[in-house]
Image (cartoon, rainbow over all chains, first blue to last red):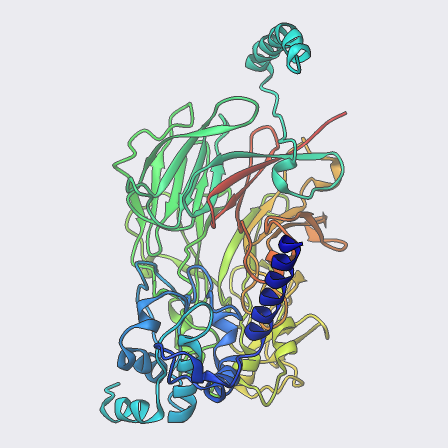
Length: 150
Length: 427
């Protein structure tokens, strides 16, 4: 009987986890971690920008394409220095090895996106596909854009 | 007690086993894997995994003596870009050596020479009577200085029967936009890429240090050809073009993402010297069966192309990436395969968010030197499952094809480096 309760408990926990994963719940108050500043609204807005501009190359799971388009998972490019990441979006990228792997496709510049759109999509990428990192805010994009040399 | 019966059978089994081993030495019977190497094949065919190379196995060639040469995309941990495999038993083989400190795609052999390419050069190596490379560390550089700007960098090669070698130089661009792959960016007039890329160049197979000035731009307007082969029946070069992509990403007001996933076709072309297949100005729509004006050059998804551009010989689903073409001249496979074409489709990435596809080897029937009748998927499930294929996360990606001296079909995989061999099990 006890075992059954545990199993039921586990199932309930598991399904609530599954629900939580499907909906990036817009109630971030709970965890004072690196994702504290990541709001559900940013993730929703960021996902929309991702689907429109990034998904074709980087794929729905953020895993990229072997030899062509780099993955957005577990890479220092995504999780590390924010300014460098913002510049990748502003200027595009080509011919750069990522984590020792060459990728031969061309990433165009996405400088037509607004500061807010770039902040949203990068926050989404930094908190999706198994990534967890702090949010990027529009003023940070604005500041990087102001000093960006093409 | 449980083991009693098998143990009882062990001795006779060993005797039969050694007898059949003895028989193999003269017969060299090829034994398909119990699961046909995980592939789905037409009835009567079997497959085995010949070897796991662990490298990104691009193109492959097999000499008349059965020595297998595989070109790796990058040198392996031992610094070797070309692997040499020899048959061990039952059709399997092992890597016995390697040479060539450069990565690349192209590899091709005649009775006398092995040819191999880096992403900017082509080398040749003298073969001895056993199909062995005489001086692996002293290749002759026959072609040099080809354009390599990362995108579409593979230099695939094949030879005709008159001493010429054909080299693909892929366009370092998707559609010759002012800003490559940028939304809304238009095409450059008189696309400058075509001067040194976006076509097939012909060189002499026996002259050293040739570059553009010594060669002939044999055919142009070909965005990127990875699979090509000489058709000895018609004495003609056939190529497979990787069509342009991102119609929706670049022109969302003209195309839906669904159209972008299904357009344009991957095309087979039968080339004559001087032909122009039309890239970047046109693409081929295999739903309307028309050559269309590219949106970078005034097209809108409805306007047909103008200009004298080559008609494809055959068309295949968009973005499935044909990486090898092989005319089958063997006698092992049934009659219908003779002089037809096998095509290895590496598989798509640029169909997202629609399901990805490809990751198979296709057979295209030919009659009198022309595609005749519908193509069919010949070897499938390199991906491991339909879900893997749809997600664009295949286990293996077919890349190279070669015909063995007995008529077996070899297939390489540049994801895990598996070498496959497909045989017909005669009754």
